[in-house]
Every structure is written in structure tokens, then in C-alpha cells.
Length: 385
Image 1 (cartoon, rainbow, N blue to C red):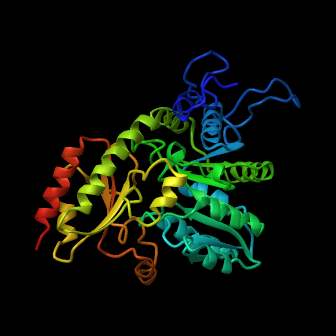
Image 2 (cartoon, rainbow, N blue to C red):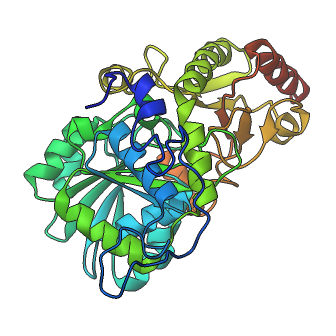
Image 3 (cartoon, one colour):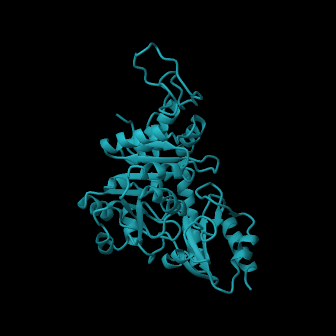
């Protein structure tokens, strides 16, 4: 029985937090590929590190507990995690995806799984009636991000989970932007939760990894087989780094969100800013739903400048905030979704779903908010034409 009831403590003491062999308060890095067996045909817990490694197992137990699932699985990247989940499906199956999802998710469906006759359809998952009308016999899952990348669109996760159950299909949620500290989809009825652990869970831009959590024994067995068979697992050191990162997730996210809320209000009131996308702002799309299913609005913001501001000059003028792929690290990062994270999505599709060439995505870090805002303000001023 755990000696805690709050997630802040579970981040530190959850899963397997003590080494069973030495009593070390940090699970060691078991840097080995194989294990000496006790005898031919005799059962032994460890046999080969693709199949299982004590450091990785501790990470998997931790994320399972944090998300409230029955089993966790670690992978070498967020895309490896998504790929493993999509490998649950077969020829002729179809997956409904949110209208704005990470470009890599779109790309692997459009360019890889299409070769195996697994189809997809981009849908507005905020419109439940329209979404239900798209559930045909070949549809086997609904894959949602909420808030979605990069427009921060909020979907009612409990409603989507209930809809999926009604039709006997799976509900999958990419919870990268929120993490279990801010949002726990399995508690809302979702079947599978996916993370790019590279982002907030790792938190320091020094590890690439992915995580999956399920809440069903049959799914556990199937994903364990896929993980072992395809082998896209992280090494022991990366697993160790993730466990270490997760220990400070709560204190980091509290600061991330505090800064993001101030940055969102600053951008909302700035004369150069045409539109701000942030689910923590009253009046934002999905604000009330997000309040119901998440702790707060998170730390991701997207915005657009008016046409008389040159976004290329804006990016060039930043000094503290880095123009870079990825998000969720302690440092503030900014990117141009249309040419970076979502470049794999065809232009006409981007335009239809609102990922314009003027959209800017900001991952608010934990630096001094005054320094962040000063950097944004200077870059905006220098980009005016």
C-alpha cells in the first residue's frame, strides 16, 4: 500500500522507486544487454534487455501508476510509441484522428501505415455528432490530442471515450501537452494514453523517448508482444533520465503554467497580436471543457501576428527564446508549425484546419517571465514593417 495519495508524491515515490537488490533510493542504470541464467529451462525474471530491463521496468511502472492504468510501455521515441499503438490495427482498419495533431502522427499514418491498407480520416473531434456519423464498420479507433498540437483545440475526452465504447472501438489520447500531472485521460474512460516523453516528462531537452499506458489486460498482452517483437525500446540510461525528470515534473509544470498564463494574457493584450490560442484563457475554445478535465490550461501557446509584422524577422530577433523543434523543456522554445512540426501535412489540409503560415507556437519555459516577455516584446517590435 502506497504511503501517499497525491500525485506530487507519486511522481517521486510511484512505480518501483527503490532498487530491490541494494535498497538504493534511485533505481540504478542496469547497463546490460543480457543476464546470466540460473540453469537451462529454469525461470528467471530477466533474460534480454529488449524484452525487459530493471531500469526500464521501473519507468514503465511509474508512468502506469501516474496515469492510473494497469500497464506502461516505454519506447525509444514518441513516434515509436505511436507506431506501436498503430500496430494494433490491421489491413482494412481505419482510424479517426483530430483535425490538428502532431505532424509526425499524420505522416506515419499517411506515408507508412497506408502501405498496410490502414486508413485514416481527419475529423473535428469537438463535434461529437459529426464524429459519430463518421464511425463506419471499418473504423476501429479514435485518436485525439487535447489540447491539440498546434491550435490547442480542446476535445471532451470523456465524451469521446464514451462514444468509442458505444461503438466497440478504441479511444487513444496523446497526453503529451498535459502529462498526468495536469490531465489523466484513463480516469475519463480512455483506453490508451500516449506520450512523447521527450517533452515535459523528461523536461530538460536531453532525452528522446515515448510512453504508452493501457487499462486492459488484453491490450497489455498485445502491446507487450508488439514492444518485444519490434524492439523500439529506450536504453537503460534514457529510462533513468526519464525517471529523474518525472520526479520534478510537478514543480516544473507549476512554474511553466504560471509563466504561460502571464504570457497568454500579455499576448492577448498586445496590439501586434491578431489571435491567441490558449485553453487557459476565459472565452477560449473549449475553456469550460478543459477546466472540467484538466488542472489548468497547460504551458503551450500559439498565436498569430497581424499582417504588417514579418514573422521571419520575429524569429530572427529572439535572443532568449530559441527557435527550435520540440517543446516542454525548461527553456522557452518557439517554432513555425507550417514549416517545422507540421510540414508533413499538405498545404491545403493545413489551411483547411487552421494551421496558417502565420501561426507561431510557443513552449513557455521556466525562466523569469519578465525576461521571456521582454524578449517577445523586442522581437515583435523589430518585426514590424
